[in-house]
Image (cartoon, rainbow, N blue to C red; front, side, top):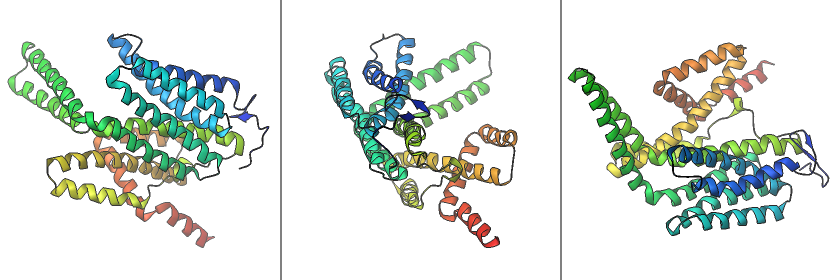
Length: 340
């Protein structure tokens, strides 16, 4: 750690360590998160959507902010803020939701404290991220696992009602029976997929929040102090070969297991596919840069992938999976070394 006691720079801003406005933003996020998480702003549709969006954004700020306070030894603020937010959340939550508040806030605060302490201790960013990720995965399953069945049934019912509304509207509009059947079957298939992959979506949400917050913490706080975030450039990201073990296990469960095993396998495959997709995009970015493609052409290529939708997603994920054991970038670097 190239960090001194009087270091005052965060992201190029001079001031107290950390900068006063950053400290105030973090403390405000701690106070506002329990309010947004428990919908105290009203029960209208607009208020509920607004609270959900606010809670999502505040969690990202906290995954950045709590490690930042720990990194700068602001333990008094960490203790007061985390305990105060927990007590506020418990006072707002009813009896049935208090355990959810403890688990949810514990996931954010403890993961943030851990990441800040690991970074302060000079541990590698990738090691810190992976351990934090596993911690979030476990606590998310603890929080949502018992609820998945009821949540899936509720969403399935809402989806079925929506499909019936579409069928009624199209029939009253004079559409043919064949057209109505085709559209309703397509919508019902979408509903079935959403319901089936609901566990994966509830896991991926906090993972995305943590990832964005961690990259923000590394890119602003750590880079501002040490001159290096410790995170490799995006074009160098690669999935570890070890992910092939849960991938193979999920595929075997999908092919040979019962309905429950297949459901678990589908959600595991979805989560793994997202990681492989991200590293597949990183490999593509590396290739585009080596070819010297201008930004406009790179944007067009990514737009084409987006327009391919499911096919583009799985094609990119397949690329990331193959690279996890082929490692084309290392081969190219070795070849350049030999040639030079």
